[in-house]
Image 1 (cartoon, helix red, strand yellow):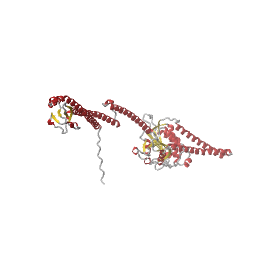
Image 2 (cartoon, rainbow, N blue to C red; image 1 turned 90 degrees about the vertical axis):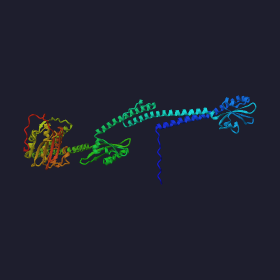
Image 3 (tube, helix red, strand yellow; image 1 turned 180 degrees about the vertical axis):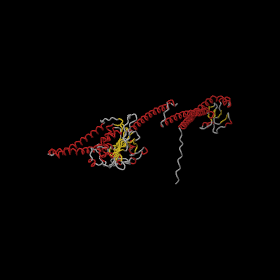
Image 4 (cartoon, rainbow, N blue to C red; image 1 turned 45 degrees about the horizontal axis):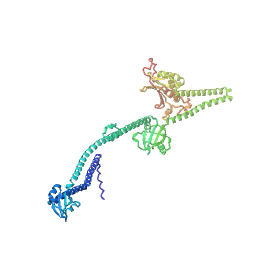
Length: 582
């Protein structure tokens, strides 16, 4: 089966070609119709008028012909062909014998289509005088008028054609100008169109309307651009992650916080949510919201080399279709809730033991142990020790509360670390006992920090006390300092105890947090020493941390701002020799 041949291409005429064609057709039809109409209308009347004239002339010439019988004289006077017919109808005389005549006689010349226009008048002696003129001669004026009309029509057609060409060119120029300007406006170019740009009144009105429309579009675009910039600024400034989906569940927008949270970029727009963010709980919440039910869901986001983050997603449907989701990072909130619960539980536990001992000892004394000096002294000693423990615990809690509320006034000034370490060792010498022989100090004489001397002393005391408690008696301890090169000086207390596992280090500075609760209570303490260290260091614009010590043990460090040369007093402290045993 042969393939069908392609349809011929249609010739499409432009605006000017159509206008010209229509003008030519209208003018031609008008001229031709006028000529035909005039010829058809005037031909019978011209023939009738010629016939009437011939009849009058024949009536006037008949007596003359009867008198002298000269047909040539009649023909010359009337300007027509003269024929004399007898009573029987036979032609007996003709002024133009060579012109030919119909066999049937002059009466046949009146038949339709005859080439002669004739009229007759009776003669006195019988017979008739016929006058005849050629039809072409009679209708010559009508043909002249027809020719004139056709000529005038042709001239009018030419003039109209010329005017139409000029008008179409003018209109085409204005339309092209309008087209170019509207195309430029569509591409964002500034409008340069005014009412005077076009020569045609109607197109000038259109040009004015286009200019007004362009101005309105510019205002709308500027407003949209401003709103978009404001919207982007709001989204960019939000700490919450924002994810928008279309009606098909494909990602259309993720703000910078969301990109950082999920590790996505705008190249992934247009893909399904589960392909971009591989969290089934989030995709499930988006599906429920797309069905018209606002949904809130919490889930854990786990990424490689990062600790889990607790997120809460609020998914809401849009009126135009699609879903917008706002994700809040609840990691700190949940951690603080856990810390609060642990704090309440730990405080309750820490208070329960000394209170129970005080209560039991008091009851024993009331029941008669007071009368026995040996047992009374033991019970009173227990009450005293646990009362002191309760006082120390309450004092530490109040101190932490003051630091958290910002009510602890610290005066930062240049402090020589070598002097301060020497003072701290003097305070701790009775507690250290024989351990003083295994304690080494390596503190730079030129290390000066901006800190509160009393607060820094409390920090070093707590760190050394913590190292003493968890380090065997014969194992070495070390206090050292070093400049980090970024404007800070780092003070380190290194022990050789059991050390701290990596998963405990992020929480070691929390209140009452214990790596080994059983052993921690054996060595004493309130569990608040390291928490106090953290709060005091941060109050002095410093940082704290803990690292592993090689080959065993832990290194607790405090990093504090280094004092500038202009802030350091002129008198320098006596240096503490490095690597010496105190």
